[in-house]
Length: 350
Ligand code: NAD
Image (cartoon, rainbow, N blue to C red):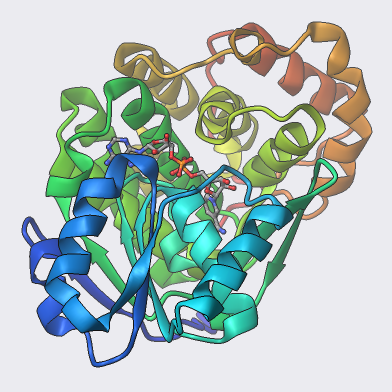
């Protein structure tokens, strides 16, 4: 088959390395920056504020997951009141998500300093929650202009947050292998990201994990999301499940479904002949959830989302009907170790 693809990747400056955050104030231009931060990053935000001096409009540490619209409105009002002209987001996906909500209306640049492995820093996707429903959209104005990955900031991430967060990043790599925007470049990123994340998870090695997460975010930002993310989005929206933990429990089962359609190089990057079982075992060793029931979901609640999963599975390399979707959800709920999935020539992903 002839090789043909469009790799649409808007430029962002990416800086990776221990100590990069401590140098950030010297790199930022003259404008009034509001530092939005996760609760855990209050000290780092205060340090940056001090170094910025007059260029710091203030700090904002009230951050909640899924960005409730009332919180976004309050943060936008505060940004205006302080005369903000730019945003530095230091923290997890929730802090970056709040900065995106402000940038969406204020149209100012974001500098993202991710301290988890969520990947939001590399996308133009924003999310806002109103009346219990999460609305997501895409807008180039929310894509961070600069991204600083500093492993020193993620060292404090407790293992019970780090392990599911790394599984969430691994899910970006897996989905990127068959997502609609996949290109040979995103496939390379996803494969190398998966290798780094698997090694990082085995040893809980923070620099390796952040490197893998950076590649995963990059792949996700260009390739987009596919069936795995759609299932997690449906579950998260319907039952308010925790983000990274839900990814961790669902990933082995979606990998089992699609593994037969994966080319050899991708299977190798995900763990070999039995990638789904390898991912499942890795999650268990790292202490990340493998069962939705451990997140508080009841088995009888699954029926409510089967039809939505089938609808969202259009374009998946392996066809999904109601029976397949129900079985997949049931296994993710129970935390069953995936059975071996033999390779097939049908429907190879790019
Ligand atoms: P999070 O930002 O809520 O952080 C999880 C917890 O970890 C928080 O309590 C936080 O304070 C703490 N924490 C963060 N960094 C820490 C550190 N270095 N040390 C100690 N504690 C630390 O969760 P998340 O998983 O990073 O992000 C999830 C959110 O991001 C969800 O709302 C999800 O929808 C969104 N998201 C968006 C995109 C996108 O492209 N828009 C992509 C991925 C995730």
